[in-house]
Image (cartoon, rainbow, N blue to C red; front, side, top):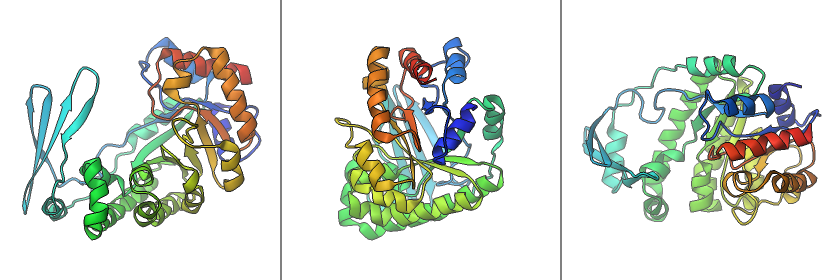
Length: 343
């Protein structure tokens, strides 16, 4: 089987010649490096191909950008007043130090912006598919609705607004859902046939089951339905504890779920998860990129992987990491060693 055939068969619970070993993207590897080429050739990678444009902001909003030292300030002009965001970068990392929405009035300013849907350009996705061919599965990343309020607000405010301004948070989420559904539909019409949805973890980790039910469950079910109506594969990303959400994931109806993190990073028990989900959703995981794949010697990684295979079974399971694309060349070598061990 080719890698693409192997991944699709595993997602569909069909028999495979070996369980796929699927790094998520190329990690920190230079794309033109020998190790990246070897990784693609010898494993079964998921490769992301970005889509330009912002489905949330649309084409009608542009920010004024000012750079001062390590800080970038972006200011959007709206009919109700300005919105400001500040982002700081260090030698190690980067993060927002001022979030766009700080008050309910800021939310009203965001909603007042004239929304013009972006044109869809899937050319990079199709080009990447041609490049990868049968050596992997190319996915278009796409946010779900809750990602909009969860990232425009600080993590603290996202939680507090669910308590203090639930109607406003719900309105932001509903607007985002309509925009992302239209975006997904047009991407499908442009030939995109595999998606990776991100965002649900903001509700499951920060708001809990009630917040997930209100802001994610029905919205993501509709998004997945749109993609499936065009025959697309839907791969869903949700970090953190997931065991209490398995029935909800099945209700959403995605084809594959990652990363099902094992303790101590998450709470996933693959045997219990499979018993709960049956053959409704394939699993991708659950080897931590940083603490297992990128840190341990190959024989220890293989031993842990054997335990995961015993727990998950050989149908509907894809060995992978945390799906964050954080591994280095050492991690790549371990992914290759896993694939060679299973061959």
